[in-house]
Image (cartoon, rainbow, N blue to C red; front, side, top):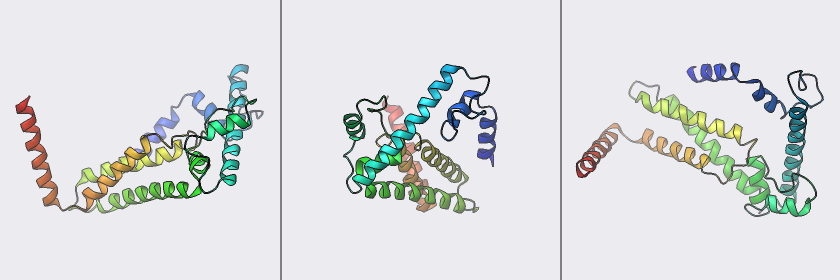
Length: 210
């Protein structure tokens, strides 16, 4: 509930430019709500070009996925192939602006399936940890960490729809944290306590050495 309240407050106080840029994902630049009186002609032109460019790149990445469904174009080769085939267009050398079509067009559909399976497994694990952490014998901090990791995974999934982040470290860091939390949730309390004591002892030794 707290997370939902924070998100609601953040959305309520978001600046107008946030809604303008977000509206380019689905609105037609000629509709009245899109071309309000507070937008300048330059902003309208930029938003229109941004919308058309993203749609063109998205369709191009889907086309390459259909043409090369198994192995794709090769990692990092979308902008190279796109630039070579559409050199006269302004968005020729741009990336896909979509992580999922970036993977499907550059590495193939099997790679996309593995990528999505990893994301779904991490989300499912965090939901499971949040459920079992409600029991009195479990530690409340485990539920908080699982909730934060779940929000991070879902936030990445949303951001991945408008940015090409397939080879960045953000996703893999969050998944690694999810794997660690899953291991902690399965470990008995006695083992965790022993590891805490070992960690505290190591920190005291390190502080004494310095």
